[in-house]
Each structure stands twice: as C-alpha cells, then as structure tokens.
Amino acid sequence: MAPTHDDQQHVPGPSLWPVGFAVGIVVLLVGLVVSYLVVAVGAVIALVFAFLWVRDLTAGTALAQAPEVAPENAAAAERALEPASPEERYPRAKFLELSTLGLGGVIGGLVSVPAFGFMIVPSLLKQGFKDHDVGPLTDAYSLTSDWDNQWLTGGLEPDVITEAHLDKESIFAGIQRFAHARRDRLDQQLALLNRDRN
Image (cartoon, rainbow, N blue to C red; front, side, top):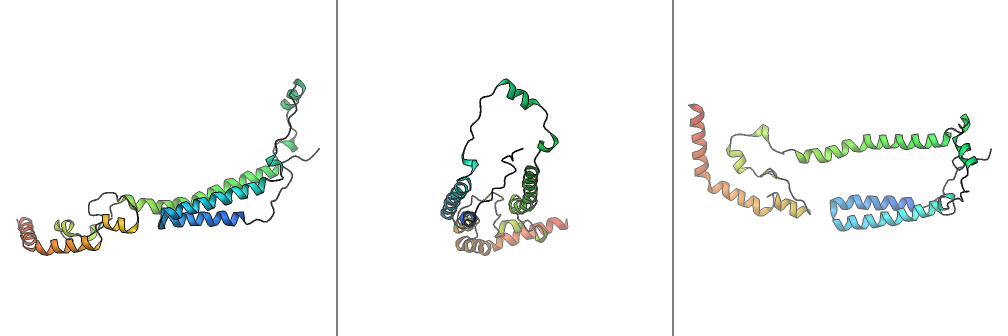
C-alpha cells in the first residue's frame, strides 16, 4: 500500500517569518496601552510576516497544488462504501495532530481566561472606599476617579485623568470647594449628629 499524504512528514525549513510575526503581535499588544498608531503598526507587521510565513510553508508542497481527481463512476462509489481495514481507519499522525491542537487550546483557555477575567471584572465594579466611609458628606467631598459611578469613555492617559476629575485643575477646584463650604459642611455634620442622638 502506498503511503498517504497524512503519513508523509513535511517539516518546513528554518525561517525568520515566525519571529517577525511574534514581534508584530507584541507591538500590537503594547500599542493597546500606548497608542492606536502603534496598534496599527503592529497589525501591519503581524499580517505581513504571517503572509510570508504561510507562503513559505505552502511553497513547493502539495498544500499549494490541487491533485487531479478522476471522474467518479459506479465502481469507485461502491469501493468508497466498503468498510476500511483497521489500519486505514484513522492514522496515528492525524490523531496526534488533533489531540495536540486540542490540548493546546485547553491550556491556552486555562491560562488566558483568568487573565482576561482579572482585566475586565474590576472595571465592572464600583471602586469605592466603603470600609472608610465616615458619613454621608464623604461622597460629596471625596476626590476619586469613580465620582459619578459612570463608565469612563477612555482615550489617552491625559483624557482619562481629566474625565476622572483627577487632573490638577479638578483637584484644586475640589480643595477650594471643600475649604469654602466649611460652614455649610459643619452645619450639616451637626444636624446629622443631632439626628443620630435623638
């Protein structure tokens, strides 16, 4: 019996394309933190090297050529319906290939799901100081990024800081408001203390 395509080993030669592809992915991921321009550069690098890598793998192999198929006739159809011998049922190489890919996918999921969870879940929670709340006036005068309990629209670091009211101007305005409202704040605090005593 002649060896099938699955039984023949075809190992690609050494190549720098995978390294370039990995560099492109790293640049793309760093760009998610730095800037959209860097994301675009990383995506272009990754796509170019992925194309070159795939082209190199398929050049000169049977993967790039479609075999000629003989016209089907009744005898060939009957042979196709015959049960295969135990040796031809499922090649060992194919089983190992699929099981390796499946195991790699499971390991990748086990590694990446917790990381994505720790990245996404905290942004869905109100980041407050519940254990240090010293009264209802605390929320009115606290300088926190979660001051309005709303999603931040994002952008570059200065945009996020400004929207979170943690820039210099917002902090200074908060301190001024705290200082100018001293008499009102003390009156409110006294009213709350009297209410709690009664």
